[in-house]
Length: 385
Ligand code: CA
Image (cartoon, rainbow, N blue to C red; front, top):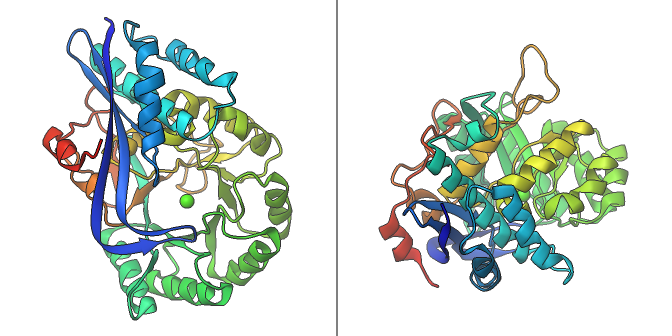
């Protein structure tokens, strides 16, 4: 079997009401999908993390990776990862969009490999420790609602009613005092038995993050995510010594090389590699192996289409409980799945069967490859390039 084509699709959907976090506010969602086609007519699909900037990742797939992949054996996924990575190394292009694009290609190759071998990706990864993943709701952003606290209260209560046992809210987009009020509102709405996580999207310096963490400590925070700029290892270590709550981060770190110091110095309690950002399934697995050697929990960051969700579900299925114990518990030994609940047609409309929460869990897909079927008409509908 040979690779006959590699295609990148830039997708964009506008949403009726804008929302935001500490770094951005907007009314559109975007994604880059990658399709690898074999000479036998099989297609594998991947997703390149794109955020607000789709064009660089799409350009790298079309201009750099496609020529390097045509005619290659798509089953040799890890060799192809190294071949593509080698294109970047001497130019210093080993962070950001180039790695997001590589992630999309790598995920597409794993999907294709699973389809060719008629096996779900989690079996290719060595087997499932669980057939469903505890999902937490990512939402509770800043909105332009006239009564923001009432809107937060209603949204938070809605997640509990849907069966979520954990929710994550945004902070860092208002003053610490206002964010404390917002977090108190959410905690009151979800009750004591639902986990609450807070995510600052890198909005603070260490002294502000320390004050915010201390203010919020009484709210029983499950983890404090990206309190600091992504590269600030010493800031994370300082914060970790000062706060009792777990610190999480890593969604904006690219490849195991960026993760190495954070893991070796135990700067995170929880590392959140995003398979669509950090180098695909191949690199996520290497990062998870590194994390396990320093006892760091792995909870994947997920933000995107059903391709990103399916990829993360297979990865979660294959992650062992850390550490092993008799009754592995979500958030303590068991990995949990980030399930974005913000308005996004690219999450809800691209798969023939959208992912649905059942009893607080998402099922791991069982079909070959990633185990999802994409709606090609919907892809064309949202396609901008
Ligand atoms: Ca985050």
